[in-house]
Image 1: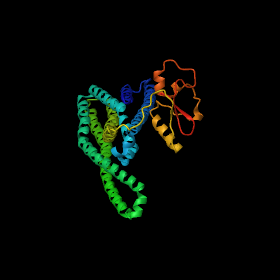
Image 2 (image 1 turned 120 degrees about the vertical axis):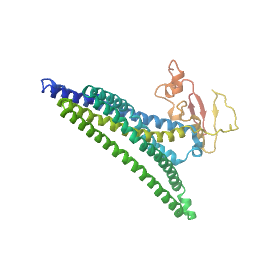
Image 3 (image 1 turned 90 degrees about the vertical axis):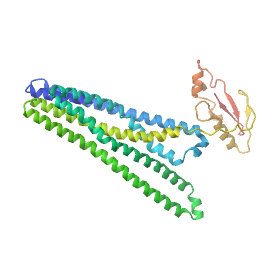
Image 4 (image 1 turned 60 degrees about the vertical axis):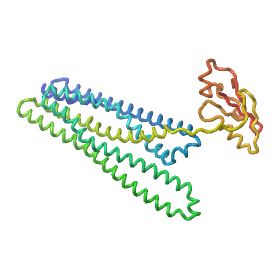
Length: 373
């Protein structure tokens, strides 16, 4: 955003120098540089947003795998769905405030320094006006965050009720309770809609003030600059430069307001995600069974072959450190050490065989499944 201050400065100098040769190419070059910087900023912010999105989803999936069968006891289905659909996107969007936010602060300081060279009065007005805009919007943003928290809680509760309704629809039909449950859901949905209207009302006020207050600030500073130019305190070129600086300052001021809204929304979503990530699975007693020594051949016999396969898949897990292979998967694309992360970490020299040192489990189908750890 600092580059946006360059065209007004060059334009004011060109007017005061009576359009001397060289200013037009300089203005054209400044425009091209700003266009390239804007494109680079957008690409960088998109990468940050997507990276944050994927990292959050990965953390949620790992937490779900850790909770396992305890997930329905620790969190409702509605909370999980709402977190995956809305909260992840809100968190990723809030992180894009960082880069432009720093640029907005720096550009604000640069504009104040440039105006200080033109007029002390204009510089003081700008230095005091921008923080005043933030102070005016502070209470509104705080109220918006509070309303968003209540809306988010009600949304998760309603989603949970919808999932329960879908899962138990056949039972509700059998007992004749579908109508009562549906009426209760409609009432809760109407209550959530009213909360959504309140959130939308506050959001619209934030958007309106974010667009209107900077415009009023621009008009006030321009009027003050015109008075100074009429009195001969500043030149016409400096007046044009002042207008350009303040018009450029509308961008960071509007971004401050929009960024504050995104941060408030992201904080609400982050509280839900961190609360879910803090869940811990309950302690389970170790089941009674035989102790199997590592490196031994173990036969698993069951009346139903699919049960044996399910047990072997459960033993392998989803952490990437075990490899479950049927008889059709005896050959690997490379070594077993490269097929699992743990083997790749422990192996210093890759083995030459198709499988270095497998631990095999035999199922009731009559074939062996290998697991490398």
